[in-house]
Length: 218
Image (cartoon, rainbow, N blue to C red; front, side):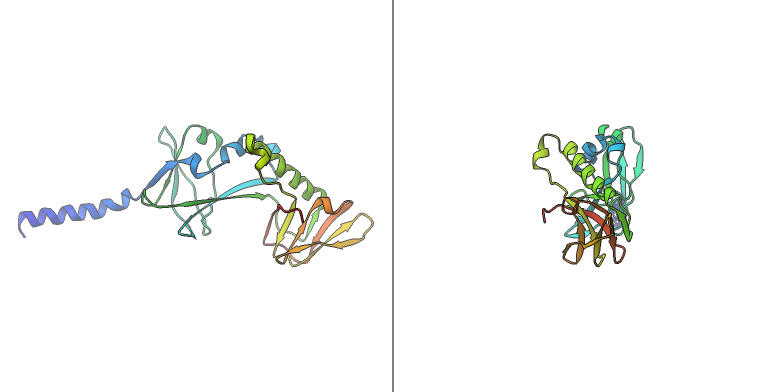
């Protein structure tokens, strides 16, 4: 092989080896996690019943198990695991966001990535709930949303109840033992405290797959 061809081949091999290392998409963490800094500024004791989750997608599909790393200005690198649904299992802390940390994704820099935010509850799937705890969760959610939205709080969504995904059906139980069926939306029972004055418990026919917020008036 001529020296020229040998040199060209070596250069091609080096380029092939170097390409994966260059497949890194980096950007400000604050842009990847919208509203997270505002959310974390609310005292932890005031947001104990709610949580924020973030998921990444590309071309409408979850970026499952993608490698993500948070890079702080001083060079410290913290892995941010992403699960099979494309959701982050760990989020940046408030000091990290305020310091201007960067988010590194194992993707080309020009890759188009979408971020979805979900404001959810800390309630666990169960068959039986205290009505006052459900009401407290709804109330806390609206307080936190208002504080996180700041000047835009008037435009922020308002949570009105709790929805129990794929729970079949359920009833609201009054203090005197009377029961009233929970309303359904797309086969999901939901509980709006304003509609059930005097209710002490909520009972479901089966444990829900997810306990989230309901934000409609009916």
